[in-house]
Amino acid sequence: MTITVAIDCMGGDHGPQVTVPAALDFVRDHADVRVILVGLAEGIKPYLGDAAVGRISLRHATEAVSMHESPSLALRNKKDSSMRVAINLVKQGEADACVSAGNTGALMAMSRFVLKMLPGIERPAICAVLPTLTGHTHVLDLGANVDCSPEHLLQFGIMGASLVAAVEHRERPTVGILNIGQEDIKGNDVVKRAADLLAESGLNFVGNVEGDGVYKGAADVVVCDGFVGNVALKASEGLAQLLATFLRQEFRRSLLTRLLALLALPVLQRFKKRVDHRQYNGATLLGLRGIVVKSHGSADTLAFTCALKRAADEARNGVLARISERMAPQRPLQETA
Image 1 (tube, rainbow, N blue to C red):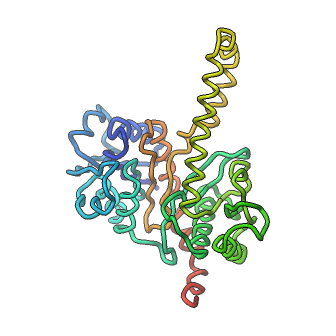
Image 2: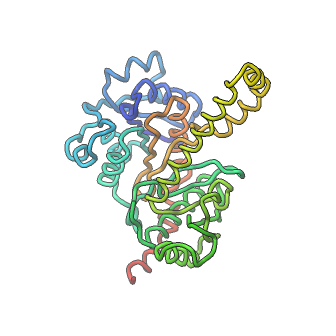
Image 3: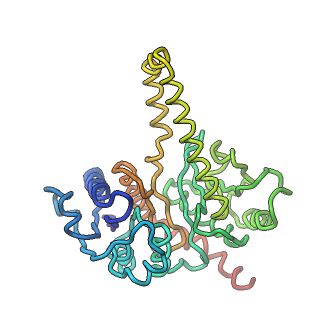
């Protein structure tokens, strides 16, 4: 089975100078994939070099969506943008997945307009992988939905669990809901009602997860609304940058500390590899009738390659079918509610 990934080559802070080399590395390392490079042909070709064309094709698009462009204007006016054409390829069945490092709002708007939602899913959610003491966890939503109902959070839990079950081959991944305490009485009415729905859903629900529990690996899937999820994510990124800056400052404080840094270099390199955010790049827009993965806009070649791998893994393991199958028992309940 060959997996085809459509790549928005013009998206992100760096455009083709990152997306095209990443695509070449991706094809070189995975024999069962092919890629469609979408964007301005004159901007892509210089980075292709002498690459074999067997599993790499080019689809010209006359426009590009800027990182600060209004999502509604991009949806209305940029119908031949690299982002829109890449999503269209998924809709038309020419590609199994789409990856873009471009404008998140525009990508969400275009994906929802073109691909539509899976049956039983009311809103898409942004799902990303975060490192934990025990491995990693999947957290959703990370910014697509600021306000959510308990039913939306239930759907997020089902989608997240289906994703983990499909990609990681774990039939009953644990699911928790992000809250201000572990006790059942904690949280607002929406969170408490969502916890009740998750407990009754048949998922392997482990209850409330506090903020520190995310990184302790308290659950394989952590559910929250987009406002809470995005704040938690950005606060975590800021803390990581703070600690890295403090560490560099302390090692550069004197000649002695610089010598100690040399001695500690092997440990520091292993530590850096374990917490390297690039290996977790690629957030999935779950709930759509197609696989769409959003790469970080500032991603380098390694990070973008990881996003491509994530998209291919989801297509290869039938994530959409797994979500649809898991949502089927919920739809009669929604219709009678």
